[in-house]
Image: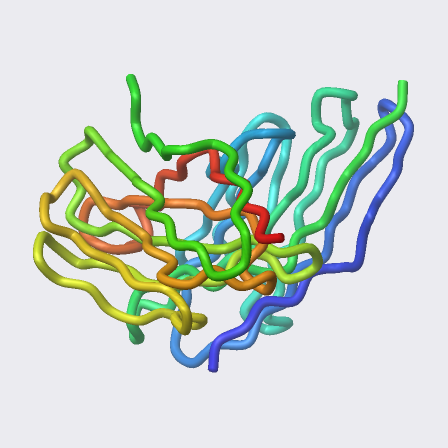
Length: 113
Length: 115
């Protein structure tokens, strides 16, 4: 079945450092890909999405490019802030299937001042 | 804007007790979902509903039941709670399923502990 694998956490960085959180997927067909963010004590919020190969999703300084050839959707940010501390989830929905979100295990990110 | 509201936010149960978690959405969404979140495992789908009066099993349905008697509400029931059901539960809704431009909207979660 469909699956999503994220890099192991936790990840700790200093403010203004560069961030990459790796995400790879396995799916039949052509899934849509998402990054969700969960701030402490809150539910998940959609951060960005991409619906087809080579699409780039972006929001709040974060970017991710849908790479079909490597089945990847890595999350990047050039300069992180303390307020970016959260848990990040990569997810996919396969429009050929039951249209349910499949999540990765999540990556906890902590940014130190 | 209320969005998706979950009740209660916290609960502690003893093994064998029963309880119902309530999810309410005010966005007139057709689809609703219940997930559980466990450390290192992301979110796993328990049950979902594609409309009023309909429910379907997700990835981890055992030990749970659901009902969707009204479009705006989706109830998750534990008939006989077990320690393995200690988790954080999230409800979500979406307009017509998880299509690319209509992602799911999540509640803030219910933290449930079974002793």
